[in-house]
Amino acid sequence: MRRLLPGPAVEDVDPYEAYGDAPGLRIGMVMSADGSVTDAEGWTDGLGGAADFRVFRTLRALADAILVGAATARTGRLGPARLRADLRARRGAPPAPIVVVSRSLDLDWTLPLFTEAETPTIVVTSRRARDRVPPGIPVVAAGEDDVDLPEAVRVLREDHGHERLLCEGGPALATALIRASLVDELCLNIAPALLGSPRHTRMLGALDAEVPVEPASVYLDEGVLFIRYRLRT
Ligand SMILES: NC(=O)c1ccc[n+]([C@@H]2O[C@H](COP(=O)([O-])OP(=O)(O)OC[C@H]3O[C@@H](n4cnc5c(N)ncnc54)[C@H](OP(=O)(O)O)[C@@H]3O)[C@@H](O)[C@H]2O)c1
Image 1 (cartoon, rainbow, N blue to C red):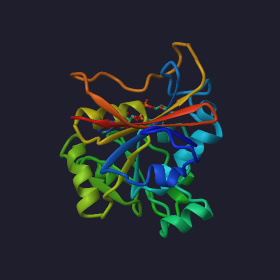
Image 2: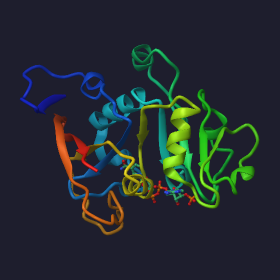
Image 3: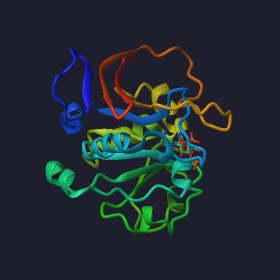
Image 4: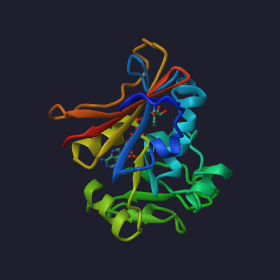
């Protein structure tokens, strides 16, 4: 991985160091050069390849908890958090829990995501819905009738000690977090491909106003552009 900004580095950089200064809440997502966040199968594996996956794994290893929207969990493709031996050694701790955010709780509780996680997967939902989460699955109930994301983030930090949060998407959750001004950084990986079809999903939904971002650093690896945008909300 080569650093282009700030000041091009001559030597390759180590992703774990390049992304090591994790802020409070970062979004980490991959998209095609024309803004699609899903491949032809509605998933992400066909987007960024090995270079993207290295940064994806690194962001996970640097997080205390990994937030995902329920629709991403409903694809059935999201396994429990795992850590490769080298990243586990650097992290010095078990994998961060996946945190599934859901109002409806329309989730398949028999998925390995819930049954086989070394660090149990947490569910964030409203207080009204919380009793519908099967026993044994840790729950953060935030908000009475609807999920209150600022409260959920506060509880994850204060009661669970999860300071450094990573949101892996999808677009609906990422948009809601940005709208709630909870996001410090967007780590956007841009794959070298144009997908073009309207079948594909865009990275974000509607925002009330433009959110200015500042590219803090830019890297290039195997054709994938990695941009760390600081949000100035
Ligand atoms: N390229 C990438 O980096 C990337 C990353 C992740 C996912 N994806 C792709 O994105 C697609 C899914 O994205 P998506 O935008 O449809 O859905 P999503 O963000 O994964 O999940 C949406 C669901 O999350 C819950 N949710 C979102 N915001 C909420 C809020 N403010 N309060 C409470 N619950 C909230 C709701 O769950 P309930 O419906 O259960 O109430 C909502 O329906 C998949 O195709 C996946 O492959 C791409």
